[in-house]
Image 1 (cartoon, one colour):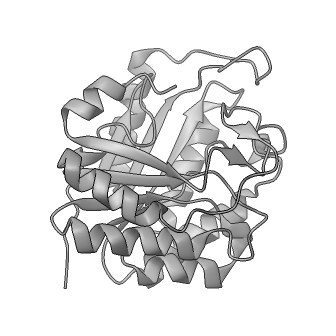
Image 2 (image 1 turned 180 degrees about the vertical axis):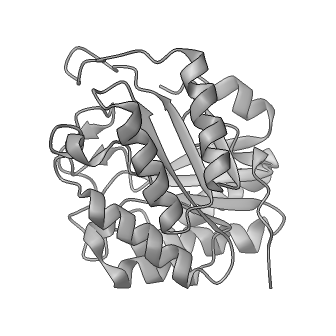
Image 3 (image 1 turned 90 degrees about the vertical axis):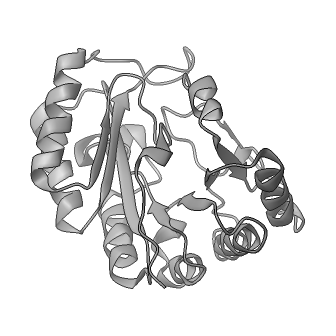
Length: 248
């Protein structure tokens, strides 16, 4: 349901959703179906890599539903997808947008060992709103994941993002941005929450463009290497605009 598909595709950037299309969590904002997911497909990593090669993608984002039913949350499958992309598409920037893996350090380590260029995990909202927006998530767990990723990622950068319009204050947003920078987060995205259906959380407020402009400027002052801020910005919007440095 992303509003930017055509723009990103024209830039040879695309996002793949792995682990199937059914999530084990029930977040109040998300359009992905919740329920009992299917078994993982062992051929999926190679197909992602093959499709990336066929489309000649310059930047690929690999994300997933959350799979709390799996012992490692699907981390090994993520890692194998990264390795398949490295083998088949060595010139493509590989970004992964991962779930919190229930806070498991071992699961996160599996992904980091595969050395993505960008490790993204979205906090999505401010701590006060987690009980209604991400009831099965935990803000501190997400922040600690980003801190560990920054510490242990052999190369590459970390990234996170927020939705606004769910009832948070601008000062709460700024505090989250400060805390993300405090754990070394390099890239930050922020966009307007849009209600997928009447069954999802209501929009409490629409931020005008000038507020997004101010948040972008403030994020750059805080030291983020790249900030994408605007009403239609989503986590992977213009993901290729940030050029990570690969260090061997």
